[in-house]
Image 1 (cartoon, one colour):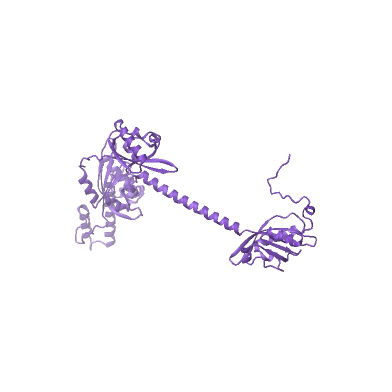
Image 2 (tube, one colour; image 1 turned 45 degrees about the vertical axis):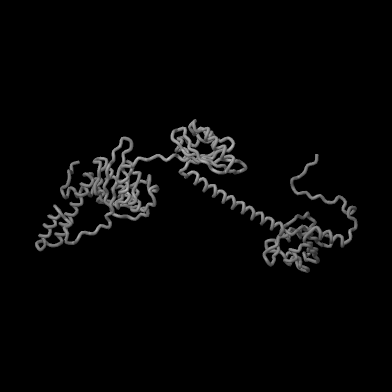
Length: 474
């Protein structure tokens, strides 16, 4: 049994002398020239003694004008070792193989594929070369075509993506039907909204299954008419789930198949006047920020003033964001606000800060209420920016009540006691007032008061004992 190797096999003449005889030198030269684009005759030292160039491209690049030059000196540096190996194999009588080398040219490099073989006992070597410029040009064209196909494919994908986005975001119900079977191939989310069926239930179903039985015949006639013409028609039909819609259809062809583009536009229903329209208009124009959250402080809605205060772009961007991402000092203010809301149902004029999306911070006052609901209680927050408030006039009284009285008492001490003692008394007074205010703000929660004041619990307890504040037995 004869087996064939998958490797390249050379089958030589069986009796070359008998087959070719004594061929004339001119005939042999013609054969060599015809079999190659460039032919070289080398001596045993690799010097070019004769040459033949049959390719006009090679001749125009000066390839072959190498008489009395070493063949190895006509190639680029990375190809020199290939020339050395081919010459060594030819002189040793070893089987040769085709090798690709590059020659320097005026406009770059020229690739030639060579085969070298011994031409006699005197060391002569015949070199046959084939011009690879045409092959390289063909490969370059193939690469260009491939890149063009890839660009076209990318543009097609982008166009398909835009179509998908438009198809999915359209407020109008749009379906794609098979023109012959009238079965649903695609449906956008608006179809689900008006029919009450999800996409999995719609795909593959007859379109008439979405319609009231009384409208199915007329709808089928409209689809049949649309199949025969590209002009869209319109018809009011009843839906199987109730209500009515304007049905229109038009045919288009894609991938050698016909499809129907069907649109369902619900009939306009008179909407009762919204009793809260005036209130909503006021909240949308008011300068104070207003935001509604769930009990986890996830934003449900917000007015434009809140968006401006937090540098958010749109109301949709704010939805479901945590309010404490913007409002309050971390781990302090939000706990106090939530505690007040859960215990008392309201919070008034709570001083805190608000942060923008970019991290900038402003002072604000917060008023909040709980809106009870059996299924979904919510919190409403009114946020007023107080950072730009005018400072009170110097002549206006800024302290009142016990504070004013204490300041007046300290004033009477001037000239009677040293100033350092007055300063120490003033410091103690201010410290005591701050602790009392923090305890009032936190409903006597000492842990929260310590956080508000920036003190450790031990320091706060020490100062409470010092000023005799609170019940120290707990």
